[in-house]
Length: 178
Image: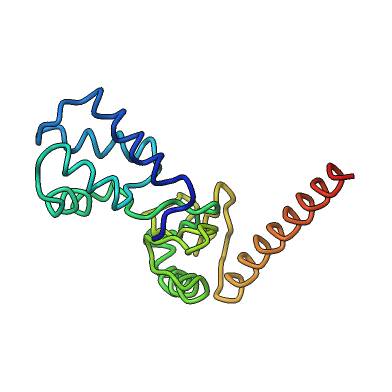
């Protein structure tokens, strides 16, 4: 995933700041990765390279730790985070089909973020709404009894919302320029 404008400088700054709190030793790798993710919301490749350089270990060692533990994200979270429940009830009611529908529609796989960073897609173990299966949670909104057709409707509602926000922003800017 490509970095956004200003993100490279932010990564360098945050990693340098983190190493003011932690000594550059191999045994601090996991706490350093945790703090990096806490500050940046994910572990960008550049941050892992810089961490490897600071600690003096191969980049592959940092990457292998980051991919071994599922607490670490290698992709930035999307503005809208989609979580597809895969608990027993949701799985039995077609949760895997819903996940595949989101993957197809968004053009990403589970654990990834769309290139525009609008959506990220995750599989979760259970959201505790078994009677509403299959369930999807978008940001904090629970979407019950989701079907593949509802996947399109859910995404369309967020696309419409984004266009409205853009129109409002354009109108504000036009008002300021007058």
